[in-house]
Image: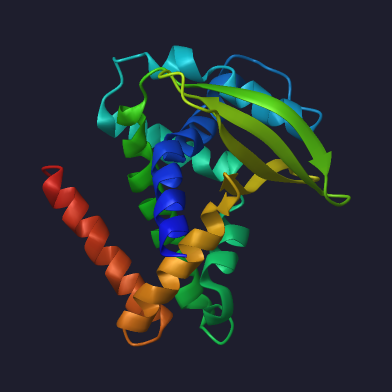
Length: 218
């Protein structure tokens, strides 16, 4: 289990930039006048197909990148649904106010973590390889991240939900390891170390965000 966790952690770290790529390109396509995707595979493929050109744009500052990422997270990911999932059993019995605070902090924290991963891009490509329907509203889109060092492709699955509002990503699985599930386990550990409440987790996230601002010179 320890060896597997270490391997999974390495794969997750190598592939975190993929999540940033997908979120980042949502409005880029919209601004270009592209038609809305008609299926989940097209939704993911349209996003990642523009990745390389934009990632090579070194004109964007870290602040610009984070700002764009923040705006696009709402457009492409179901943050309320993901927030409930990553809190698991701790969601129930918590006040609506604390839940809303967590959603906001979780979104800011996600932006901070994943937007920074753009710096790790070194020429990898992302190829959509297929999709399968999981339910009337859910589809898993399969893809591969192709390393530039001729290493084996990294398998990445995107869980996409479709409703009247369009397509939303609800999880990303890297080599069989769910990012949402991994995040839930990490948050459960943080909650356990901070009084066993969401309030404790919220305070820990606030502290991390504040430390990040200071280290960034804010």
